[in-house]
Image (cartoon, rainbow, N blue to C red; front, side, top):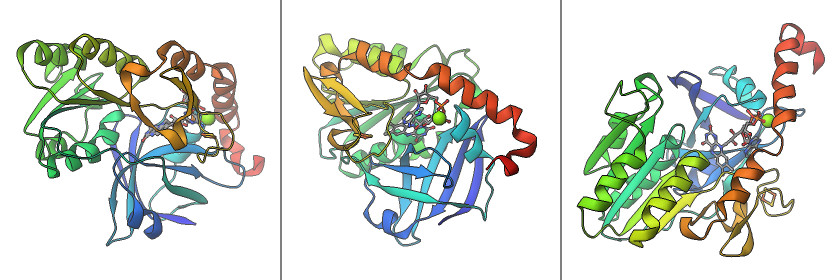
Amino acid sequence: MYKIVAKKVLAPAIKQFQIQAPEIAARARPGQFVVLRIDEKGERIPLTIADYDPKGGTVILVFQEAGRTTMELGRLEEGDSILDLVGPLGKPSEIRRYGKVICIGGGVGIAAIYPIARALKEAGNEVVSIIGARCRDHLFLVEKMGEVSDALEITTDDGSAGRKGFVTGVLQDLLVGEEGIDLVVAIGPPAMMRAVAELTRPYRVRTVVSLNPIMVDGIGMCGACRVAVGGKTRFACVDGPEFNAHLVDWPVVMQRARMFREEEKRAVEDYFLGSECRCRKR
Ligand code: FAD
Ligand code: FES
Ligand code: MG
């Protein structure tokens, strides 16, 4: 069992757990993830390792309540435990001295970009970060992102904090105005990552995205997470999750993310219908 030693609400429906998991904390690297199962009847879901403390033996997970399992997870409190936590999984981010790097986090992707931005900064890069959310209340980790960035740009869809609009607006200005951008790393909703890829493509700026297809085992056995990259089938859990954004077959990524919408909707409806007696349903 993996104990939740601290819980924080970072934004509406975005929660952070610090979890006791010494073996994972000892081996985790930026860009990796875990697959967790709340209890023996739970489904397996992947979450990025947003931070790790090898000495303290804990990992940080940040999740958005997007459907049934993440809602169930959000109801757990400090002192509760999670049945399974498997990881670290996936290839770590390629951290080296590139020069000038732009790190982009959208929505809950801000949590995933944080350890990568920090590692890139520690490796001697000039890091410009762009983080975006729906509105001011949905922004989080602003201070921590500022600490690991040479410059931090903030966007909100409604203009309630930072610049009004999307992260791509700031990126566009940087691409036009600044010479020598060596790498762009973007993590967020697929539509955002695709837009970033299309923006940087004509500038031939190396661009990396972390794909988030549906995963089941997380170890390359089930094939659920397959994506097409550069005309080849790749399993995001073992070959990724980071890929060259310009080689990703985006229509396939978007289509596969929508595959189980009806089932996901029903699972949430069942969850709320049964919420008064969930203990007996298990
Ligand atoms: P559902 O209603 O079941 O699904 C909502 C949406 O989430 C679906 O439409 C689908 O796009 C996606 N999803 C559903 N099941 C899975 C699954 N088994 N695997 C992947 N995506 C799924 N979310 C975070 O909030 N924080 C993170 O740090 C984070 N890291 C991720 C890292 C990786 C490598 C991947 C692949 C996904 C990550 N996600 C993260 C997405 C997260 O796994 C899904 O939001 C979660 O599984 C939704 O489960 P649900 O039952 O609550 O929602
Ligand atoms: Fe099963 Fe990747 S999640 S192969
Ligand atoms: Mg689900």
